[in-house]
Figure (cartoon, rainbow, N blue to C red):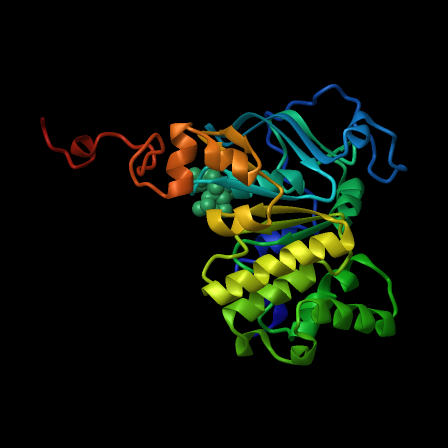
Length: 314
Ligand SMILES: Nc1ncnc2c1ncn2[C@@H]1O[C@H](COP(=O)(O)OP(=O)(O)OP(=O)(O)O)[C@@H](O)[C@H]1O
Ligand SMILES: [Mg+2]
């Protein structure tokens, strides 16, 4: 299978879009018109003073008429590992796409290092994404490329580095995730846990300031989950990066994260350290943390009454 076909087949559309300009909804607000190019030197800003690498202010977003995030405000402190949790479909992946400029807010704004993420400025967005690492929810590895080439991909796309330097960087990144010895293997020859580590090595290839992990533990056995969790924490501390983990895995997140946000119904319903969230009496938070099927969070996607759909008269 050719690389192009593999990208399309394996749903790497998002991965590809990561390197391209963002979608801008027709009804996007223009904010205050004070957007600054990301190519300019980093300004000394309130965000920098408050030690937030990413600051999200009054963010509202929906797909078409369907609201997903409503007036959400979050701060991601520099150097920390932060979890974003919430039930399936609450908008976690959407939030990461907004931070990466794949989508544009309908209201509110996102500041990265004090500078607004401007999805309308292709050059600035491209430069911004060089500073971000993304581990996609469904891996998005190129199955027709070797492990080595997968990790080399962002270096080839974003830099003009000579081949000898690309080789050294790729081997160092693979060493960091324990897979240097597997560099020549194909993606089809490795396990799910190894594939997640390759994706992690690729996410850190450009030494990003922020690494976003979308469901890094899904589908892994307990040992592999422990390995990935450990790696995320160690890489964060070794590089001084900021890590955002989107996950449902309460136990693992509470073990490695400094701070957690819980999303529900398009809003932030709780925020705090693991201890703070575990101690809360808030029914919605308790339901999520304990994995209880009954509670304020509903099982069903919004729908008309089933009798109506089935044409039954009541
Ligand atoms: N491209 C899209 N177009 C229209 N609706 C979308 C699109 N992507 C996601 N949605 C909808 O937006 C909502 C939030 O999706 P999102 O993928 O952000 O959820 P999530 O919290 O990441 O869920 P999960 O935990 O299952 O990954 C879902 O109801 C989904 O159906
Ligand atoms: Mg998701």
